[in-house]
Length: 454
Image (tube, rainbow, N blue to C red; front, side):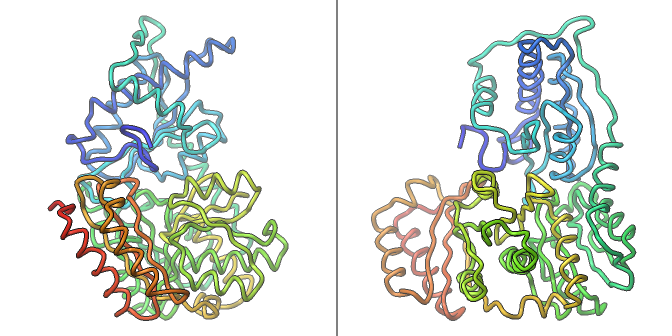
């Protein structure tokens, strides 16, 4: 990870550790850099950079300052306005943009924001380019201003967002007529797009949390507050429900009984279906180390293989590209279908689940009943220094003791967050009580060592 950019972009509290000045400098560098790349290849046309944003109040500030930096460096900025992260990735690769920028802090609260950089292939930006951006932010590079007719312009590109909606609709193979589908849009990026897609496909669509006001994104809503959709599905006797996060690159589902179907279960349902239809290369899915033990045991029963990567859809995607795998994702709901997308896409994931439901004529509850999910508890501990806390000898000793006590009937995982100043302590065990006991045991040691900050 770089000095500013983590595993999912440059993220922080708006106008605190992520400022309008940061956004301006990022725009200044990218506008100049991609213009230079084109000139070196004999192309004198301006760099073309596409921008999307979520519904946070600060997203407008970052959009305008990014645009100011881009055009000041001679690039043309194309605005998708409020849209999803995967739509920016789709437009960047299909419309031959030099790069894409998404303004979002995903599932974080409204006062945070982030700047995600996407390359011309619709993938997360490479580390080499990100390090150059960071050098410019730190004043290590000087770049010229564009002047006269070289100054860039701004283009309304809402048509690109509409093409993305059309693309999603085109992926469905049949009508969803008579299916009662609930959508929780988290008052975020999907608030208009998701309903448009499901309505077009004939579903009886029930939507909640689709009234963004700039301050309510992810607030008791969306994939991080799945209990809201669970209640909604049961009260309205819906066939299925889908919850997205703030920028809609995640999806967590709810079955007809109100049970949560997280990313692990989605990987199982879609992976099994793809395997049975010869669409899963090497019968393998790609998971992260956070996936549940129950997923792996269920996969073993049906002969479905799996890879394990570090936490982060970036690492899942890298593994998929390297090996040509078709399906991968995270328990948190970042699911990548490499035939259709280069990044996690919440709405796309909901459509792929609907395809399995419609084709098999089974409910989501029936499709997941073969998987016994082990109780899992994850707690975040805010610390002064993540690396110091994780490598503290007493903490390491406590973690090893828990691992030995669990044996083959569970596991413990302690890792640094890629986006926040926290250590994540996760235990998987036979009962909720054991999970609580062992997580608390480790956190008590972290606190005793004086590593926790308020």
